[in-house]
Amino acid sequence: MSTRAFRMKLKPGQVEEYKRRHDEIWPELSQALRDAGIYDYSIFLDEETLHLFAVLKLREGETSAALPGLPVMQRWWDSMAPLMEVEPGNRPKEWGLVPMFYMA
Image (cartoon, rainbow, N blue to C red; front, side, top):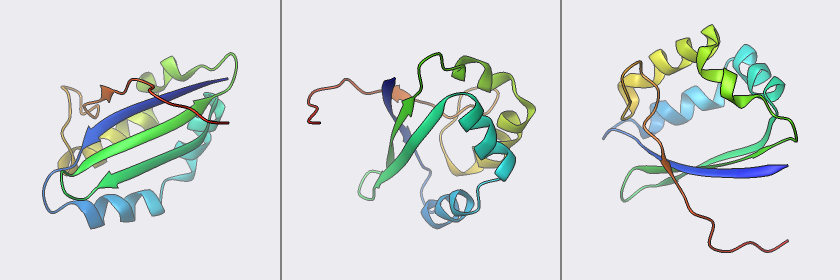
C-alpha cells in the first residue's frame, strides 16, 4: 500500500460545477479507479486559492499508470478541462506534495 498526494487548481467560478460533477462521478470511472488499485480517495478545496488537494491510497501491485490511456479517463479529463488548469491532452495539471507528517 502507498499513499499519493498532489495539488490541482480550479479556474475561478468553477467550484460548484466541479463539486457537482464529482458528486455524480460516472460509475465506469469509479470502477476504473478501483480496478487500478485506488481506494480511499479524497479531494479537498482551499477556497481562498482554488487549489485542490488530493490524497489517495494505492493497493499493493496497483496499475494506476495505465489510467491515462483508458477512454473513460480521457473522456473525464475532456469534460473537466473547462473547470481547471490542464496539460496538453486535458490531463489536469498536478503538483506533487511532499509528505511532512503522518500519524497512524
